[in-house]
Image (cartoon, rainbow, N blue to C red):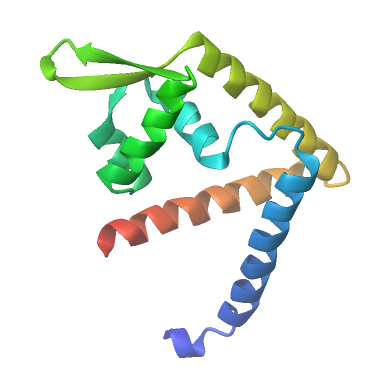
Length: 150
């Protein structure tokens, strides 16, 4: 099937445009935290899940250039959310790790986000919630693969 034969794409494109707009508007209006940006949340979450990492590894994981990630991590370091330590295998490389302050912020925001989405999706049955999560995960993995192939 060629892309021109796929009549689902206009529907998907339209729904994604609405989803992105509404997701951001909902995040701003309903989540009661203003001191932690989405990029901060994702970086802290990644460090929590994967342990200490160098800036290059983080940049690769988020598909960002080093200068962008360096600015973001400097901001996180200034807030006390992350700390730099020397890599035991290579002292020339600094590793970033989440601090207790960063872990506290991450836990608080994650709890607020999960409470919000629980309320938002409370009328959905478990099967629909599971399927939605699986499809979002599949979409996110597809985006990563696509970006890596470019």
